[in-house]
Length: 261
Image (cartoon, rainbow, N blue to C red; front, side, top):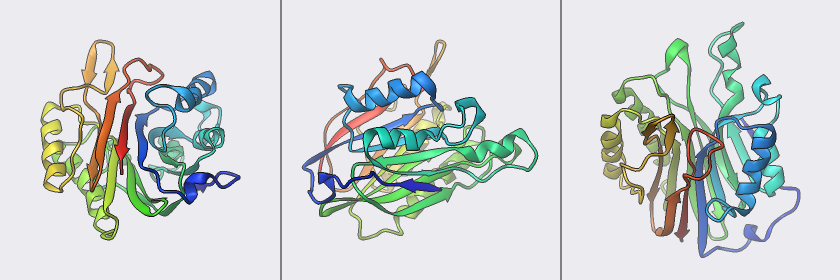
């Protein structure tokens, strides 16, 4: 796990915002020019720009395919944000898969983060591949917010996927004094039945989402699927939200919300 802070304190550290923009995006290990384009979008795009909190998935740190770039550190530095990054444990020594621990999930925030925790999700995928979620408590002035970035396994049965999501919900219970929680990320709900079962699980735990089960978040050729989610619990009011289908840097599309606190 890796964490970092901006070089100078920002005004958000001591003030409580009335609203905040949230982003969830599987960036599919962008680097080079694509990474710089992504940073510019996070800075200035009408829909995904100027976010206070971002949850990212498939974020490389030290991989040959991304020129050994510490992607999250580069983004955080450019945006002057706090960050946390975590990845799964390696699968096996002396194998290509052993380097999987350098691809992980991340949280970025304009506000300080505490109680940062890596969750190694249950139920390994092919060849023992593991997936993780990353949780943190974010201090928005006088308001505390528990946030998770999740990247679930794609090639396991639906009941085992549900157990992965349940592990994140279970961690929320370890923070009973925090009223507001957001769980978001790439849940890999590519099977039709998994979408409905995911909704059932989270609504039973008193979470809600403004996003439709039918609207896709991922595209490859002509296939479009609902893989990405944002789940909210607590006294939020959703001011606006959307999925930016015009951004094609990844095979996923970014989800964004503006929330009144």
